Image (cartoon, rainbow, N blue to C red; front, side):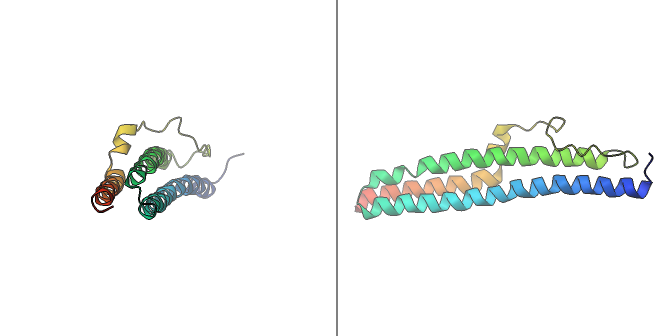
Length: 142
C-alpha cells in the first residue's frame, strides 16, 4: 500500500519529533546534574564547617568529579542524538520512515571532547575551585 506524500511527510515529522524529545530529555539531565551537584557540594561543605573539620570539605571534590563525568557522558549521548536527528532530517521524505531511535548510525562523538566542552568545564571547574577555596579558608580560620 502506497501512502500519499503528505502522509509520509507527517510520519517523517513524527519521527523527528520523537528524536527531538530524546534530545530535550538529555539536555534536561544536564541541568539536573548541575543542580544536584551544587546541592551535594554545598551540603558537604556546610557539614564540614559545622563540625569544624576542613578535611571533610575536600570530599566535596568527589561528587563534583562524578557529576562532571556523568554530565559529560549525557552531553556526548545528546550530541550523538543530534547527529542522528540530522541524518533523519536529510533522508528522503518520500520514503516511509523507519522510526528507529538508535545511535547505531549516529556520528561518533569523543568523550574527551564532551568532557572538555564549555558547558562542563565552565560549571564544574569553578565549583571545584570554590570548594578548594572553602577548604583553605576552613583550615586558615577553622
